[in-house]
Image (tube, rainbow, N blue to C red; front, side, top):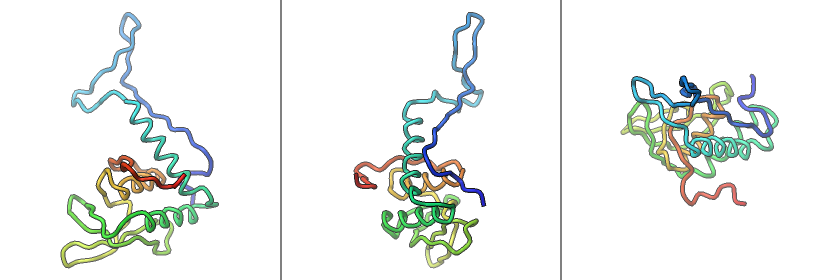
Length: 163
């Protein structure tokens, strides 16, 4: 299995194709007809770099994808207080724990509970509160998996890893 991210430092490149040259040669930013495009702000780059730094810290001593996955499991178990509130397909759930089921292709799983039903779901499919430790770690995990992260930001006051 190919490793989602290699060891070592990575650079983060964001692409913005909305710049067009006008007849006078000046660069202009255009908006899509749906109005979804926005200017890239320095905070977008700093979030991407912060996630890359977090991934590097979690996977620093790992030699392969299985060891990197174990690093993510360890930090989720150490840093996320369970039960943790989350959603799946817009439905509120509680995450009760994290594990690896022995299949590195499935990745990390989460024990989940909704009303009187419980089960195991792929951690990649769960969405946590954006400003929570779980949400920030989850954004790093999805980035490591080469999936787009759900909205997240570093929680205020969270100091892992201790410097």
